[in-house]
Image (cartoon, rainbow, N blue to C red):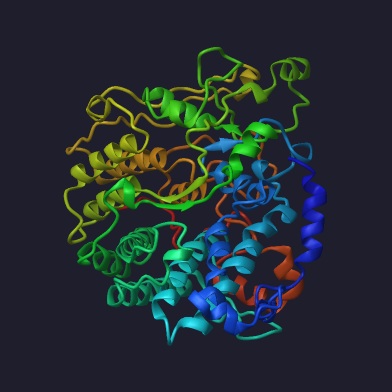
Length: 527
């Protein structure tokens, strides 16, 4: 982790203001260009979109993304893990959470998405509503991720006070997300041929029909997210997307990617710094299924020639193990992520994910979802097509392959038996719970490397069954088998908005720690 402690300290000193502050700073123009000059071709607001796109999670510098997502959700999801222990093994990956790291999860989207969305709203909502509508979709894209990390967030009352920020409960925030998406979809539908956003669009080249498909798909994602805790609301919102005349994402060409020009931040973290590698859960599932996508996602390891090798979550400091052997083999020789998956275009929602959302919607009896099996198999097919891979028919029809036991060639104490025997081929005679495990397991594979959504879905459903941490250093706060459920509220808010945080804790439904479940994260079965 390149100079990470110095970076964290510097950022914390710069970010002591709460998320409600700093809006006025956006009004100034550092180059002294007048508002009249900027207004030509909508440049007065157009320059605010690029930071919104690139800070849903921070595109650059890579160390910011590392703290915003990679050393939490990417690891907690079972996708990746660090090959050597940071902070003497006491860090996020062992549930001894580093508050300085976690500030970035909050500060990046508030500084670069919420602030900009507020300014765009003030400048465009009345006169150029379609520009406002796109900013609303980007805002919901970013902020549902924040809510899915912390629970209560500052959303509906953002920017109303210069001295304090009032939190919404997660339920209130989700209801606002649905309202904002509904408004945005209607505005874009009414202005479908407007070219005003083309110059600023890093996803769809100004095509509002594609934006409507994405917004409908995002609404479907959020509806599925709350399907256990608020089934009636979930069904109502999901069916709006499923019945909308423009529809949802169905082709890979309509998937939501932020089209950048720089390397994916994980590429630097992975290749240059050696700070992240394949997770043992990915090895167990991909290798067990003989999944062709493994070669698109990861490189073969050096520690076992010609094999994919992942690392168990939550490795402790290596004292107590055979240090000499550990240092000789070194976990850095385990499987790197492949450059094929680490493209400059940042993946946030794919057609494959939407087919799996529709499969679950059908399993829950939502009108307009289509056949459950058909959507499940189309989700796998879309994922294979995304990587131009052959063999999807054989893969879909396989009835025998299952996740495999994990064997650590460096430290045998980390060996663990596979946690699931779920197969690939659809089984109509299975229970709904087994069908859901099959859907979510394939959805988890297809969404890689987007760890935030994968972690959220794991917490919501318990699938796929990923390996627990080797070393739980939470002091009993986090149950090893249940795994981490959220991130506590961040230091910058505790310091600058203590009353807001205190009120947020009352809306959380439990103590402000990593073991408290979020609103939609309900215990028990899924049906």
